[in-house]
Length: 318
Image 1 (tube, one colour):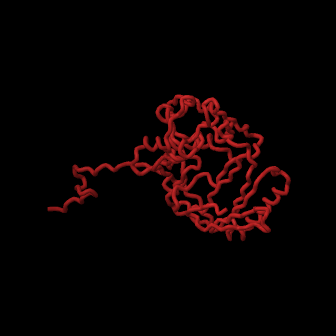
Image 2: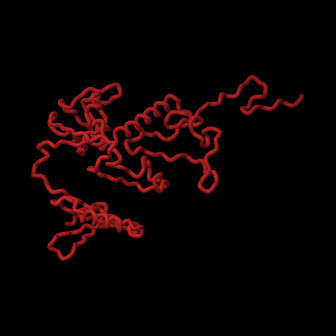
Image 3: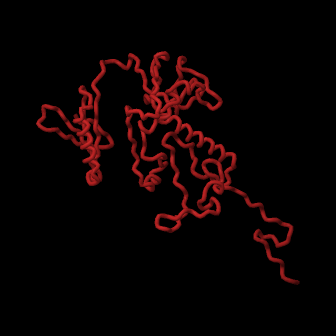
């Protein structure tokens, strides 16, 4: 007898009747539902080579860090690429949800001259934050002057519905990112998740997307910044003088980089400029590994500093 024909890779003789099992064809899909080869020049996304690194070498291909958008929460479990073998329609739906989320965040978030973060996407884990090496912070200026090309802040008067609509649990104001249910009869707070009933005076039907059909007629449901007209219940006492509390970083890094000197000089210049209200109160808090409170009573010969080292259970020592 002659030699037996070689076996194929799946145990069948070459040329025999047994065909190899079909290979599962999968395709990696990005967060917007498009194959990488269509819109990515990086490894796995087509024939183009990645750009050279800062020192001329090619960067090592690695999974992209996962981020959450600063203006809202990313759909649960969604990352930059879909798992191998995920149906394309599912990835397309997730991509559509992400596109809608980013569009809502851009439209409904506060303008950057009022509130701005140091990065546009927040890391979704501590390890990703450490790899980013980007300080996370927010600059908040609620009464900043309006740029010339920005529309005036809209007023909101809830006198017709009885009172300002807020979360019953955490007191968050109604805003564009709350979730509506029961055809608008209930809404869930986007910060604490508490569910509460919508008052009859504030009720309106939802559209086919689950959003209030009148949201673009109500500034508090389509604007990131509004000015509430406070009802009488918010005026339980005469208007109080404004309070300016300066919270200053006095850590070693703040000192050696000159940031502390710049902050103190700016505060001193502002106070001496004559632009501060005449009827006002002022306080100072500094911090490094502890928090330092200051007693600025005019009867003292010099300010008194009180140190609180327990950062887990802070309290006012005054």
